[in-house]
Length: 239
Image (cartoon, rainbow, N blue to C red):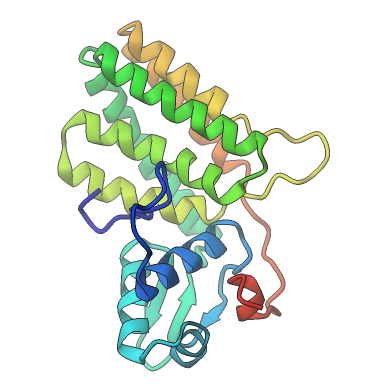
């Protein structure tokens, strides 16, 4: 995923073949901590604090924060530093509205061109997503769930659409609740499977309807604001 990747390039589907460089490790750790809600929306990230934890100079930290900002996960403000993105209710509504439009277009383009190999790859991704949820690996489940939407956009063959969706998917995924309440089920993998079913039957209208329903369910899983107090080192698993 070459255009300002919203999803970590390593540790997603395969284990890295070689040790991860400290700067990349910081990126992956902060990404996971954000997406698993150990680092909450609005949390301030200091260059000094991150540098101390990872033993890196500030220019390395700035590069990591810039990557996370490109992903839509961190907001950089002049003279105020970096904070975990904290989209408000209006922005959240706007983002899901835009996703509905863009992903409906993806469905329309794919319904008549999804190959058997494409379908198998998507179902493999869904199986990995389901397995991650069942094993309690929340960070991986979140990444795979978001990755599904990016893969669909890539198959549609429009690089600008992929780039736009990467940022939207990451930023909206920030807001999805942890679904720890009794009786709640995430069902993202079942909803994804229903989308693939429709695409493989070349049914554009049904694919669009299934995607619209799925995005509507995602919008219903928005996360309530979390307490501001936290320990950065513990949140990154470095305590």
